[in-house]
Image (cartoon, rainbow, N blue to C red; front, side, top):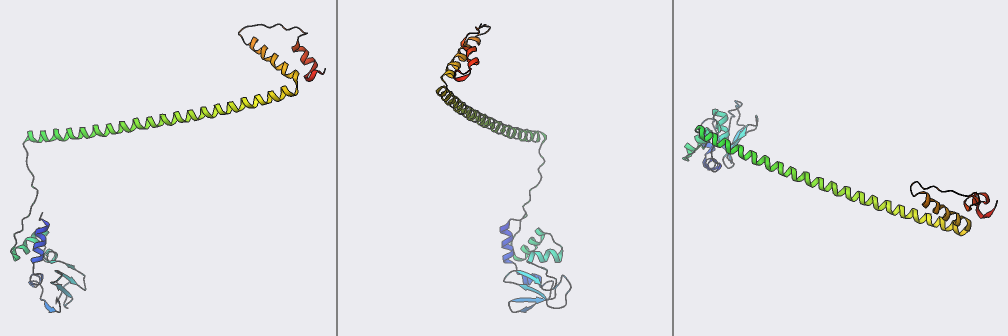
Length: 223
């Protein structure tokens, strides 16, 4: 790996016309240099080299690039070799910095593995802790929603029950106002209900009681 700043220094210092002219006969044409294209074996001067842009271009096969690209394609060099080749011509030392494999002793490898394993375990524990916290938060949120829903339902039921009781009271009041006998009969029925509802109580009614007389006469005292 060659540092980018070295590559740029070599590219800027390179005489692209001088290097390419070693392989292609070039003639000056205004601000560029022209010659036959070496890539498609052209005969006409369709191959242009621009020293101001540091690049070349063929108007027939459309091959183009910089001085490094030309050397790689023309001479079959790899990227580092092309940069070094130009660097030697312009007097710039090109150092290829590469990461080399280091053979560690067995105990060092084991220690490295243990550190990696510990790091993975810590990461896994952290992920589990975050997941557990999220689970608790979601459960708490769900419980809260259930509580709110039940409270709302209870409030609605209480309001409905209250409205029903109020409606019943109004109906009873209207009935009592229209028929005094019905009011007396209803109070008697409430008394019977309270007495009979006390477990296994037994009530004996006389045929002459108000209970039977009410059904004989009907509301308003009519027979």
